[in-house]
Picture: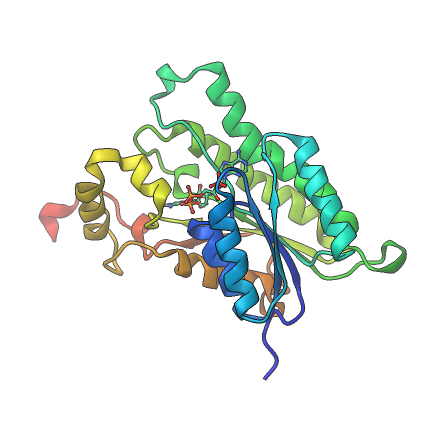
Length: 266
Ligand SMILES: NC(=O)c1ccc[n+]([C@@H]2O[C@H](COP(=O)([O-])OP(=O)(O)OC[C@H]3O[C@@H](n4cnc5c(N)ncnc54)[C@H](OP(=O)(O)O)[C@@H]3O)[C@@H](O)[C@H]2O)c1
């Protein structure tokens, strides 16, 4: 049976670990070849790439600091040299300072917005020629951004990343409108709380109580897994999503359906 991403060429930022890694493995299982991008954790990226090769797909690692446009361009130049094309770009990498707004310094603002927002503009500009067919003809392409519920819900110490993700979701809609005529779709996935290093870093010593509270407010009764997000990413990367563009799709087990204040009525 043909796999849904058979032969597709995919680049996923931050795919050595966490959600990006799960996306890389799920897409490889669906038949894709994958560039595993990393910034610091080369070992994790190499391990993910080796797992993909064990699945019988092509995989190689690329290092780039997503704050630096030149490094992003060099990574896409390497994609051009090796593959000459790209079908799917997943903007997953993110990092931020988790602080109240009043404590944010200029370098926190710069670094987070460069990583989460500016990098996606630079990367998409680099990806576009690789997503075009011969003589620049339209050819199906997919751009998928990983957002966060902090884009429209106010979470403690999350204003910096939340506002960056809000800009990212807006960018997704603009890209969808601009790139539709080239047959490139652009959508975002919006996870709730997913059990990864960054969720643990965000909650710090309160991780266990945070985890319990989130589960209690999640209709499906558990935290998200990286694989929950990855399966949705495979759908968005596949032909099955061909007429969906400019959308932000929640993958949160229903966490954002409930509001506080009604507990005494339950
Ligand atoms: N976990 C959650 O609960 C949750 C919820 C909502 C949304 N999300 C979103 O899902 C995405 C993945 O999150 P995660 O939990 O899997 O995070 P993670 O485990 O902390 O992984 C983050 C990845 O981003 C890369 N990265 C960070 N800063 C970078 C930079 N400046 N340049 C290049 N690469 C950089 C890291 O690469 P290195 O390790 O090589 O440095 C790493 O691979 C993020 O966009 C996050 O905002 C996560």
